[in-house]
Image 1 (cartoon, rainbow, N blue to C red):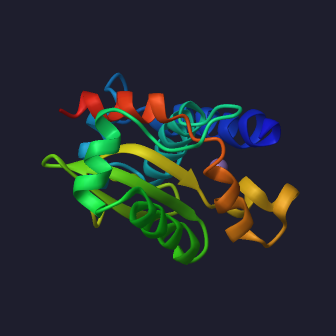
Image 2: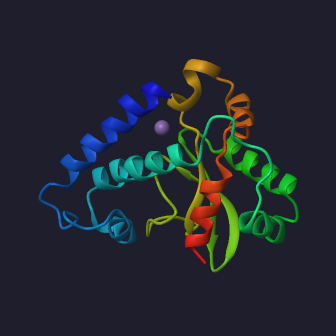
Length: 178
Ligand code: MN3
């Protein structure tokens, strides 16, 4: 995680700032940029996604996290997926089956929760996203996220993620969308 944060995430920040220079995206918020991402150079998309996705990723994890969510997010998961277990199955499936590098997401769109995955550093707030929505939980499934500890065993990394989720933070992200 240290290398992930200090090297990979840091490189996206450096390269995003470089990619923004001289474009119309300079001075705009990252959400505004994502809404029109198809109009910008691909380096803005790739590195901007890398910045946003990792920045959010660190917030949805904590030491000794995990367990079963409570509060508004718990009810929303139940009404959208039937049960927490059914939601877990859907999320695990999205994270496991994303071919190559990408992310698994829990997103909100029109009050409804859904699980999706995106390739590369794409983000569901981008105009090019196949499934759009506001992200409230995400998991990095690039090999760089798990290779040092789990080598090729992505499913073990996904299983371990459930023990570090910061549900209070996910709940906060959810409440903002209401
Ligand atoms: Mn990463």
